[in-house]
Image 1 (cartoon, rainbow, N blue to C red):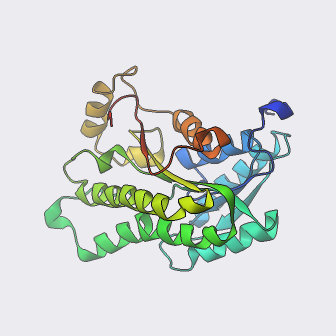
Image 2: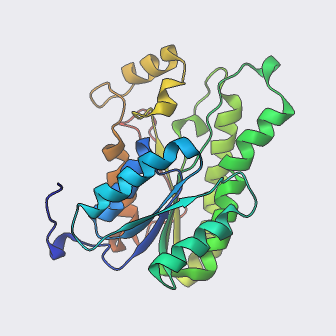
Amino acid sequence: MEKRTSPSALPLQGKVAIVTGSSRGMGAGLAFELARRGAKVAIVYSSPKSETLANDLVSKIASLDNGSEATMVKADLGQIDAGEKIVAETLAKFGDSIDILVNNASVEFDRPLLETTAEDYAAIFNVNVPGPLLMTKAVVPHLRAPGRIVNISSVGARCGFAQLALYSASKAALEGLTRGLAAELGDAGHTVNAVEPGPTESEMLDNIPKHIVEMQKQTTPVEHRVAKADDIAQVVGWLAEEQSRWISGQTISASGGYTML
């Protein structure tokens, strides 16, 4: 049972958040942290095997006993109508408005250029770029000012790694999307930022070549380790709060100093 949080420590109380790709790993950590700060959270997952994990996270959030709660939404961000489905189910559960969107769902890809196909490109980019774009488009008509949109990028957007060019390109595109949306949505008081983690404990990290992960650990100034989900969640949680109001269009490197932007 999680310790009860005092009302004074609930800066997101009354807020509604959507976190895509949040049944496991870093995404689950992001969703839990927003709930720990008081938000009601839509947990978005895509595969049947993730349903149990999503349900466990809903129960874990309920155990906070701080007024937050969670709901589960099954959707594939690679599908054009996923954003509308997620928004409709979130509003049906939590009311008329959404305050926070965390575009975390992502597909990683590790393959040499000569083995990469046009189908691979479509599979990666459809989730990693149009996914956040269309998710944001679906949310904005219901986004209560001052809304907070946080896109989860990767140090791969700024660094070159062999066999990860397609993944890196998708994350670089996401950072460009972040800046454009920040410029477009600022009139309403909304902010749009990206968080760029380095290697973070997750199932996805297990699929990254071990020599790349070891190299990253050795060149990470802070403790020469990979991140824990909570290391990233604290940055995203701050961006979701009021005190981040003058930060927009930025990419924040949450990488222990691996990239220094």
